[in-house]
Image (cartoon, rainbow, N blue to C red):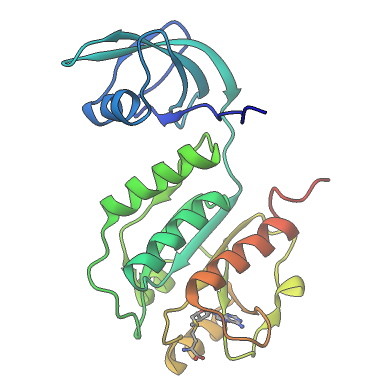
Length: 246
Ligand code: SAM
């Protein structure tokens, strides 16, 4: 039996509407022609992060310029739940994994945070944006997460909007277990994951005193930061977010 090939999906980087023709960027043209081996007349899916997803057709193939015609809408725009991920960057491969999983698990905002024990060097926002777009293309999201510049934890806490609950994953075991901690009515929330070295006692003390913050335990085993990201977001989506079917 022939394996069904899934349709190629691309972030357009510009607004799409049925009937419109658009000129593809060089990198998009390279991907469709040279990597995916499409030809003129071949169709693919594109989304713009605003109007939804569309079936498009390669209209004109030349080395210099490549245009696509937007044929019809295939899916309406839908935003992911209002869950933010705040994470302390770790080593490169693990941070890449965190960005990819945060997108697949439906985060609306991804915010790198510099904590006392964060050892990762300069965070590369542009790289995170490119990775997040690739993950959206793969997982069929029609919205894009907002990727923010890294900020120190202290500044994030000082400027926090108190109407959004900040769940910090506390590896010391002092937090509430995750099933009880995640409030099903708090649909605007954020989860905060510490670095490989964990939060410092001073950071935990500050977080514990804030009314808008709640400590959460993910069980008795110490998880790697990237595992904690995936576990916390999965639990939130199951208990509060869009994995729950009412
Ligand atoms: N170095 C720390 C230690 O040995 O205790 C472990 C830090 S852990 C690798 C990185 C982050 O993942 C933690 O700061 C925390 O946010 C989260 N985490 C890991 N395991 C957890 C657990 N069982 N409960 C809650 N958070 C956890």
